[in-house]
Amino acid sequence: MRGPQDGSRGQHHGIVGLAVLRRFNLSTDVRAKALWVQPHGDTTSVQERYGLSGLWLERKGEEVRVAAVGTGSPAAGAGVAVDDQITGLDFGAAIAKISGKPGQAVELNVAGASGSRVVRFILQPFL
Image (cartoon, rainbow, N blue to C red; front, side):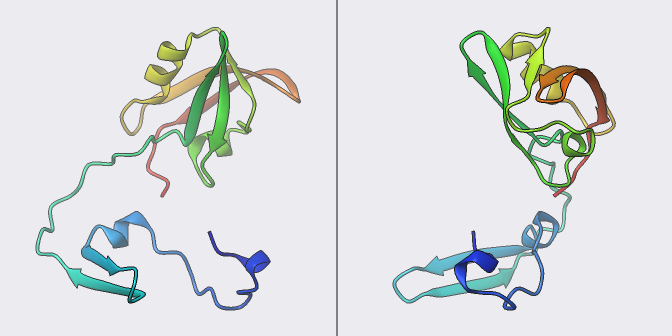
């Protein structure tokens, strides 16, 4: 990912999200350093294919830990942080709980640097 730390300061004009990218067919030629963009004719709504919680969980022994939290995601808004532990659920149950449909309420018991707490959020698109 490029950012101010790579010397490209001032060259970023915004972020292109999935809603925009879905409208195009993209093709690249790495050797030529070329990108071709062509609008596609399919205007049907595409079902969201990413986790609507914004959480990426991993197993660490018997523990369920937060490996990543999506910026601007429902989980981030609820204060879930990387390396927090999800308690009271095994890995499969934790994945099932955060993998619902838009509008579904999620409640998780979380233990982290700030102690144990209950976090609540609603699954929703955030990208």
